[in-house]
Image 1 (cartoon, one colour):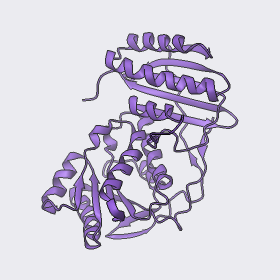
Image 2: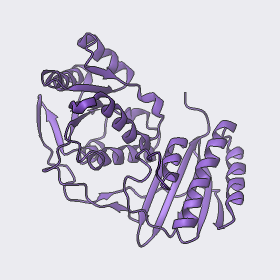
Image 3: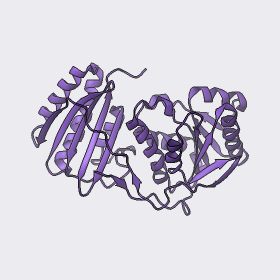
Image 4: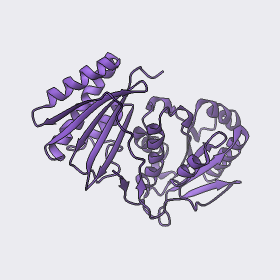
Length: 321
């Protein structure tokens, strides 16, 4: 099944500036990041920096505790890229109180993405930023990316998610950007043998939870993580029954120190941002995928009108360090 998402808005009329800054080594990182920050400070803009701890230390030494620059700890988000858009929205809204323009600098620790699935979802997150913040007239973002040890194909794949690119201190249009094109996901990997399979329908939620709990426990998932997984599983299976034709198929298996639950049904998710924006307090429905992203270490969603929806929940066997 080939899954695509409709094109992101054309970057021309979008006020949100989303730049990629490819660099090699600490000196180039500092040069590009500081240029971006100093441009912001000269324009009386606030800055939010979310980079790995070693890069944070480098920037702090250069900036002399400027109050307009806030450093945030991305480790609190865990490994799931599906949590990042809501976090960025909160950080930039807080710093942009009163309509003040805000610039963000973000660097994902790609080297810590253990699996191909994680890397795929990280790239999709970068593409979704263009859609999530398309109308944000006072926000801009620089994504720093160390290319020193990266495969050129991986660099190009990430570049396609950014309308703008920064080189030698200048921002230019990025010719690689997927302007007016659909986002094509990588195909999901096949389940590892042996896997368990269960069909479910209305009235089977207890059976689904029991099946997942037993399989996850056998795979070594900790008790605290089992409790979180039970909530996510209930939400996704309920969505299948309510919106996916009244029934679905569950598969479970263990792979690379991770336990996976896969749900398939006949439904079609049309909202690319489903589960990535924090639900409103008075919102009715629409919380299932949000909860799954908050509770699981990774969530993969593939959905087409012709082939239905597949959702994979990943839960690491061990607690994150």
